[in-house]
Length: 224
Picture 1 (cartoon, helix red, strand yellow):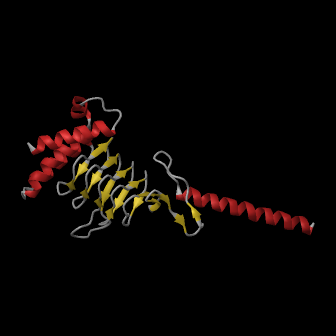
Picture 2 (cartoon, rainbow, N blue to C red):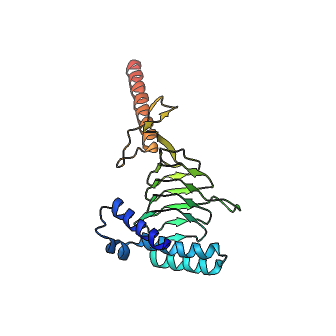
Picture 3 (cartoon, rainbow, N blue to C red):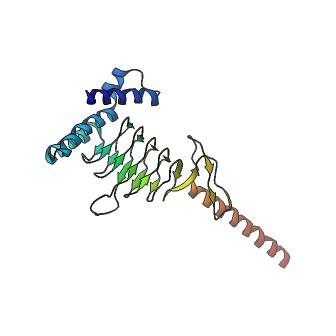
């Protein structure tokens, strides 16, 4: 009964968060992210019972069928949504809280051959956008967002938005974070248009070069 209740919760959460989902039957039959979670829960059950080989076989079948690789040792909370999940990788010691949303190409991985806890812990109500890599045994706080393509290598406090390579916090508690180098707020942020720290630095360099060129031209004119 617990499994069925969890399944219904998962289906209903997809209906709430994905506007493309029309009804429960469509979600149950057509959503590979849901299939991956179902198979993982089975694999994780056997993993806890120390049936390691069987658990790993089920996880490999899961990978073959869905394109989503979840180690059977990973701990997943309630109502996980893996949307367009091809290429998602979740490591053995990763822990995921409740109401988390993960998009395609996300990796929750380690940074080497350490033993023990080596994968991230994801808090509740976290969104991890397409292609993001969260690498290491740290925590991403509740209600945080990881921007597409970001590489996160250190802990993220709750209620933050992280973008860039390496990832850095640009929003904390709904307030734009002040950049110590520029002494002004970083670019504005919403769900659709994330600031690009690299582009911002390139724009600063472009303006500086233009200023230097203007100074050189003025000096050359004085010499003439």
